[in-house]
Length: 311
Image 1: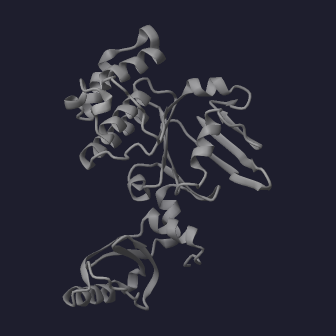
Image 2: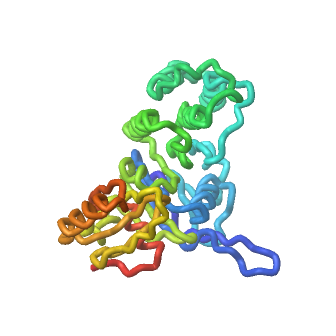
């Protein structure tokens, strides 16, 4: 195993208050060449866990083994094995993307640094137009891609990517996932830390859903979705008018997402749902609708909303 997290608990003390449990008895493993997703909203405990993997925080209980050795006993070794792209934007100042990535490559590889690696990365991500622009003049997406390249220019055995696609345009997001998969083909393992559940579902090999410091479920995307495999996701877009949509009785659960509503329905109710949606469009209450198989986002909503799982 590349990484083994065993019963890790982290509690932050607060003066005059009860301690805040950021991580609560977390256990999981990551294999060589695997993309493992840590999914959860802000405050779920993902970043605290990552900081312990890197040896920046020490667990109050449990242990973390990286390539067979305890991170607690050798935190510096952990940081030499891992590559990290943080969630926050990196300030490049006057450095160009080529300067920044080359500097990071030489720091990690020394005389073994191969400049062709940077050229290949930039080409794969279609970043040619930005290579010689100073960092302070780059868009958020361009800086995000530069930070990604800095993390993987000389990848460690474990690469940790915290919200790598924030601000990145849809086309280059696709290129980014291709580069990540190429990393795993070479044996590198990847931890993807994100709250973008729908996007992560398409790329991860296994996933853990975190909420309030705990892992609610983990496994392959298929394993995680098994409890709702008989359900269908119906997403509808309301008109601009202030209209309060009342969920029909055949809706199992509903979730509001801006101007869109997400209904979970049983597969036996698809025909009924389509007829209802068509009538709502004709009446001017809906702009459009679509139906799709249940997603990891649907199981996440169920698990974190306290609703009963459907048998």
